[in-house]
Amino acid sequence: MEKLKLNGFVILNAAVVAFLACSFTPDLRGLLPLPLFIFGLIAVNVLPFFVRRLPGLRLRFCGHGELCLKTFALSLPISLAVQLFELRNFARDWRGWLLGAAVCAAVLAIVFWNGIIAAYCSSVQLGIRLRTAGLICGMIPVAHLFMLGVIIKTLSAETETEFAKHRLNESRRQERICATRYPILLVHGVFFRDFRFLNYWGRIPAELEKNGARLFYGQQRSAASVEDCGAELAARIKEVAGDGKVNIIAHSKGGLDAICAADKFGVSERIASITTINTPHRGCEFADYLLNKIPDSVLKKIAGTYNAALSGLGEKDPDFEAAVRDLTASARAEVAPALEGVFCQSVGSRLDRAVGGRFPLNFTYNLVKYFDGPNDGLVSEKSFPWGEKYTCLTAAGKRGISHGDMIDLNRENIPGFDVREFYVRLVAGLKNRGL
Image 1 (spheres, rainbow, N blue to C red):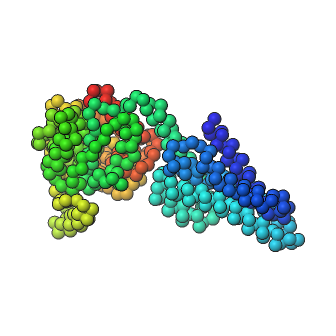
Image 2: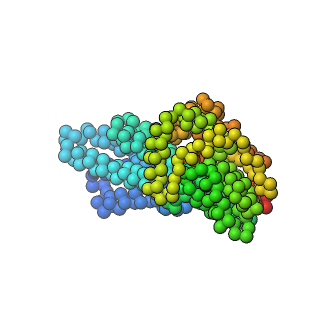
Image 3: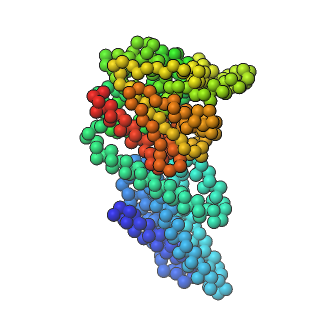
């Protein structure tokens, strides 16, 4: 019913736009008074914002852009057909025909740019790649029409997905399915930090909080040895847990840091559960190969560049080389045992082809595959299992799920895998265990 209503609105809006666009052609001139023309032009460009009650301004503008572009796409062929028909008047009234054509182009341009600006400023799913392709293809005949279709399809999928998630969260709001007994401590991986305006976990924290979760962040250094990060994380666990406990969800190297904190720094009694996400419990043979092959001078230069960059971002005493060496298969020859009295589980994912991952994972996928076998673009599938329970994830089709996808790094809606709902279900499972 909702889709029929929207389609009906687009058809009606497109018909009005086409009429406005052609209202100054010789055959229709004078049929529409100028005040009504101006009112109609404002109405067709404003009404799409109010047709759907989408949650939040960002999504409202995204839906607005979608409907404006659909209106443009439908009104364009109608307007062009009328202009071609009006060519018969060109010899008799060429000035009138040019005026009508100019008004037609202006009306269509206003509707188009209204939609494209709203879409570019609000959509998450368009991303940099589609935005760039849109700008380039916009200057190429035929290709620009194809790209317009891709943009409309992307916007439509985004608004439908987000609206469905909103309704789902509203339907279970009272259940608070993520309101665990103990708070959740999200622990980041290597070379990233918990920045306020650049969330390591993408849209996941907001989704968990909508469903009742209490969240905190690890805040350990992004580039340091597992032991150094473990010490920092142990202090953070004590701070967050207080007299109680915490549930840890840790991604990548963060999983090793969390286990180290519990095992070596005496905070296991303050941990209710540890869930590792795509953590290299058995290290990466690919990392061993690189460290053995790269000349020491080159490694020092790379490490120095990384450390300088991280220091510039506020990192205290970053140590790129120590962080990388702790991720090798040789450094992780002995897998840490599950912790007594702590519910321990692990999750991993598989990327099924290189193009499924974003840079640089699309580059490293085949290299890791050569040394380690099936992987997520960085870590092999065989390195993920740890604890009482292991879950391996992939998506239907040829894409798979990358290392970055597991933390919503690109804020991308992946067909067959809803990363936000995965974490909601994961935390709901902890709640059901009384944790």
